[in-house]
Image (tube, rainbow, N blue to C red; front, side, top):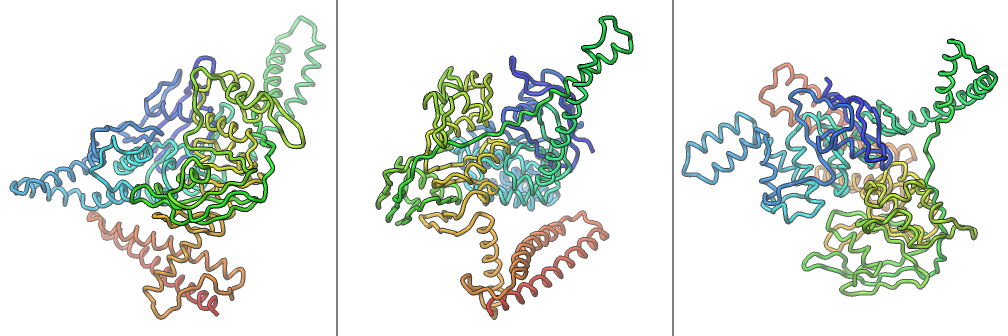
Length: 620
């Protein structure tokens, strides 16, 4: 079933053409990621779909009666409403039923109104709906329902807008960077929600794990053309590489043919026959294909790094609190050369406070932060670049000098450096305020790295960066010989970069975990499963983390896979049990669901038995 069709739309801003005559469609149950480089027009396309902007040409056709929800990066909410009032401020009929019931509860003397509201709740099965929307608010950390929207932070407003979109259960949900402003726990919950819900999605996201696990199709805008890939992120990478190789072969063939036709053109007399005129027309098409070039200049990062001494950074008994909210409590750590630390934790647990303490932009309440004499920080903050009126891109870099030192005593000009950051000569003389959000972040990243830091601190560096820039940044960081501390909710990025984690648990508790994020999740899931099993089966010993493994490599791998599979099966079991609450189910459907449920229960028991066998062997 077709939901939406985009036909030959174009968009330009002055002399800048973002895209021309592009077309695509969205069908029921598709979960589509829209991928393009920064500045290619992703957000402009979303604005056209949401009617915030108009295409210069072409049209967007929606299916009649289609219910669509849009989540922008900067949602507009009514500041005078509370969180709960914002949820009820919609045309969702079930929410109106719930709202009427709540009003009736506040007027107990009107028994007739209460009875009518109660019956409406029963008729619409609104009890389950109310439970679900409160669960969504809880998962997105919006439990204070009477809090005014005007008092919410930017991140909380984005989460409230996301909650509103999910609760209204639209036919089509259009999202612009939905994982921004979510902590890792929220992202994983949203990932599971989208993977299980029968909802049609069209979204822009740079979160590659999210893209991998949620999307079943990718639409890419590349060099002004639309390409469709039926599959997830891994499939897209394989097929895109094959497409680029194929295009290179075709371009090479066109070049050979062009040389041959050019020689023919030079030998032709001025008088042309109809046949030769046709060949001349073909010649110009061949010429265009032969001169087609991909604009795939990769960001090259080979900035010279200042020497780092043996004494780097030491924290001794450092504590910091804001009123009753403890961020750090007697924290000790001595940084070593080449350390790569990922910092994770819920929003408000102290991650940014920690960064500000080690960079001396915030003083501890007690304890000492000792910085080595040779340390030169490069601090990439969430605030990004400060835009000065009428400042051009080239001027931003020239504030740090006309020439930038590279490795092995070489140097490049500010212009050459910007070209390596994908800003061509024309773009360098654009005003900074004209840049897209992702382009500004790329420019800001450039200004941090050109100062030759030897200790990089990156606070959410992946927000708004396109996937191409992210891949190159990751490759640079892998070769960076200095220290790195990174706060990010991008699990793919963290898995690739960090060696160990600081886990901010809240109230000053910080754990040091040896491994990347996927290692941490595997460990946490296994501990949770073991803990649950210990409660249900007290006669079994609890697995000791530090015990000597008696398992072969394949058995260790099997144990991890079983733990992961059990978690998935439990989730499927709960989802099926919820479906039995539907009073409209036919006898045939109930029997079908019962069979599915029994199969899952049998599989869980089988997996648990094997899990216990491996556990006993592990304990020796």
